[in-house]
Amino acid sequence: MKKLFLLALSLLALTASAAGDYSAYYNDLPVAVKPVKTFALPTRTAGITDFGGKGDGVTLNTEAFRKAIDELSAAGGGRIIVPQGVWLTGPIELKSNINLHLERNAVIFFSADRSLYVDPDPKARRVLPCITASRCTNISITGEGTIDGNGAQWRPVKRGKVSDTEWKRFKKMGGVERQNGSLWYPWELKSGYGDVADTPEKQEKMRNDLFRVYHCENIFLQGVTFQNAPKFHVHPFNSRNVIIDGITVRCPWNAQNGDAIDISDCHQVIIVNSVVDAGDDGLCMKSGDYKKDALVNGCEDILIQDNTVYHAHGGFVIGSEDVCGMKRIVVRDCTFSGTDTGLRFKSGIGRGGKTEDIYISRIMMTDIISDAITLQCDYADRPAGWKESDSVKPKELVKVPEFTDIHISDVICHGTATAIKASGLEGLNCVHGVTVSNSTFVYTDSATEIAPTAEVTIKDVRFVKDQKQ
Image 1 (cartoon, rainbow, N blue to C red):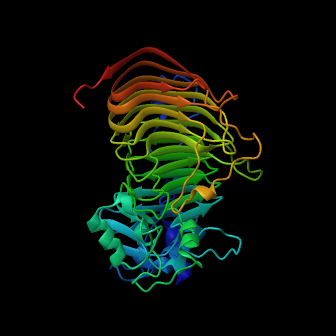
Image 2: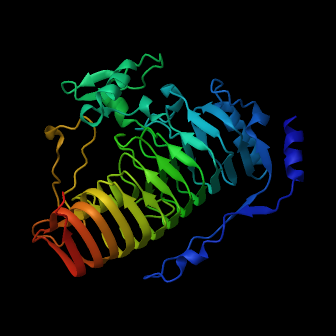
Image 3: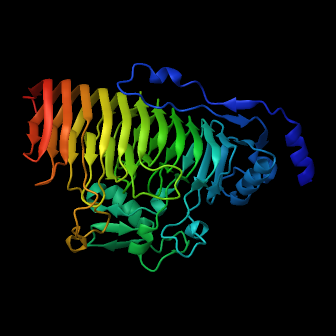
């Protein structure tokens, strides 16, 4: 039967399907950015129902997804159709030349059974991502459906960030409270699914991402909604040629570590026509320590255009890790509405690197809670349950952040507490060569708060105090 299925697939047309043409986005750039390349996938098609899948919201489809991916991959690749329905599943591992295509009203819903995600590698510090791939070429997720990480089963909740009604709803799930009732962990839940760590604090550190791929080349995400991740939502690592077009990323505004799109050590990336409404950073660039066996290191040749960010800790963010550096990044024609900060550059000793050729322009902002533009070099991560005693000061001045060669222009911001805030580190040249020009900021508290440790050049900028606040 399997041989007949593979034979049928091989007889289908092998004409490639590809992403659209993105060359027009690279016109009139202020710096030469190496463009993404569209890539081809075979047009073989198979339905998840062909492998025993049922979208009834009850049947566990982990094995159906595995079989579909394995058999289509063995035939050379193609498109797996997920039709309308609620497709309950455990983790999904993509392979080269596979397009996971969600039709309208298709929902891939990840199971609350944490045991399904335990990594068989005893050295693993986290559980398996909901959707992953490693060292693959040509992987794609497209369509009009939704991928839901069921993150409430994993995320801790801070009491101060939810209403009384929401707090009662979480406690009704079971769980335990810590820190005098100010923090709730999804531990020993009434669902009956067991825990996968010795303590709720250890389990919290094991949380997974919704889409996390490693060392892959040619990634295409289009149209799909990614929501309610246990941790981060869309997170390619050490990968090259990433196209993100017209996706939606959403989760509750108070979702702990609910980053939307994190680009970690990737080259040749384009993010366009997408909408973010998330619990942490919106469009975020990260770079960790150098990896000898990585496909690429650092973030280079990235174009971000025509996106909208609603709630997020930052609309566009660099950091807090930028060890291998950021080069040739252009952000333009985006709207940030209701973010905590607009343009956020954050790092600290031990996790810093150098930025080069960063150009940001034509950003429209409204209702920014804190700062429209902020540069911070003493950032420290404070996860749920963090205590002052957890603080560890770096013993050496290594991996020092250097925010430089950053050019921000043509920003219009109506509504922010502080327009421009910047601080470096005493005795270190951490913030220099930063310019803000031809922009307007309507603020309520301060036009600028620029410390002596930071060098920011402001030219042709209008600051307007909002007297009605």
